Amino acid sequence: MTLHLLSVMTGLAIYVATSHALHLRRHPSAAIAWVVLLILLPYVVLPLYLIFGSRKLGNQRAKPCELPLPGADSDMLISRMQQLAAVMAMPPVVSYQQLRIHEQGDGALQVLRSMIDAATRTIDFCTFIFAQDKPGEEIAMLLTRRAQAGIKVRLLIDGVGAYLGARTDFTRLKRAGVEVVFFIPPVRSTLRGRSNLRNHRKMVITDCEWLWSGGRNLAADYFEGNAGLPWVDLSFDLRGKLVQQAQQQFDQDWIFATEGKYSTQRLPDSQEGKPESAAAQLIVSGPDQIDDTLYTLLVSSFFNARKSILAVSPYFVPDATLLMSLTLAARRGIAVDLLLPGKSNHSLADFARHRALRELTLAGARVWFLPDMIHAKAVVIDDEVALVGTANLDQRSLFLNYEMMIAFYEKNDVQRFSLWIERRIKSAVLYHVQPITIWQEIAEGLLLWLAFQL
Image 1: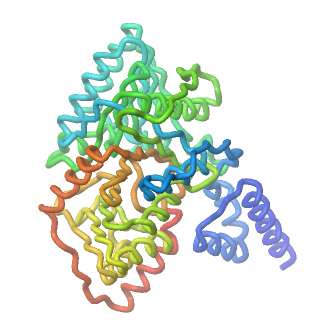
Image 2 (image 1 turned 60 degrees about the vertical axis):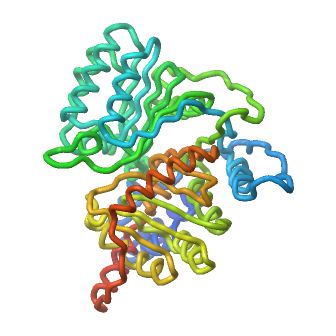
């Protein structure tokens, strides 16, 4: 009994100390779960906590960007979003040009080929999955050729995502001169408590001038299908000052993953006043940010929405606050439309989403199920702001993963993203609430209790 009490006290002391030192503001269900389990099974749970317990890396808060107060004639939604982003030290609003939205996977793949072929100095490639299939082999061959031609090629792959599906032969890429780095390999990161933190950011940057990003991983499912139809997904490419922000973010991730052992292509800070052309803003979230940046912006924007909220995500497992912001928007007459796959590639996520979908539908929102798997991630608010990129509307993505979104403020481009979602809704089926048993509700509750860590 004395040994057990000593173990409990040690476990709780470590939990409190790390939570305070690293500013680990956990979801209440996760905090309760860790404390209860540390009391009941400290011998088993303490090692697990040391492996999986970290959610933030303890970075110091960056200096917030300065923004003037919004004028009387300014758009309040955009102004509030930019003010909040500035407080959380997000990069400032900058210009971009030549935005292309990839309607289909083959078009997205063709843009990747063109970017790699056209590069004259550098190719920086960050992805969650790099599969050994037809598109993966093709891109690997192109990167190999460009590296052999003297182009500096850097490939950053998530340490767990690298093993999902058929793994590419990265040794061959390294022999050709490609710098390949794994982001938080699970074995080497175990004692640091980072094994549960995944880099879900996806970007390809060539010559610090051309950016490709969105929801697509480098695997057949996202481009041309794997023994079937390809998944419905959303990616885009663009040029302009926004690319430099993405480049700086890639370099920061590269420095972290390599612990400064490999060189970077960091650009000097560029000063730009109010963008004269289309304006956008890089929004990054994850353990490297003190705040839960994207989550905070979404909750705030949903509360401030005046006309409509249009969202698409492969998974929908929100926490109570995010769900409340959506349901309250629907109850006050905001048109809330959510597009999801009828059946995703994660059965647990599909099962866990129904409690939130029932509450959202009963509040007056419309939920649409697409017959095909849809992997796109986008939120359009009042047809004035479009958040597009890599983050899902679930707790893992919003609280644990490294994610990257672009906030587009140019109305014509916001409308283009809105139309992309609306075209998919035309092929979707409206969700209707179905009666459930008490056992289903209990099972949903237990699964949601674990959803934060899953």
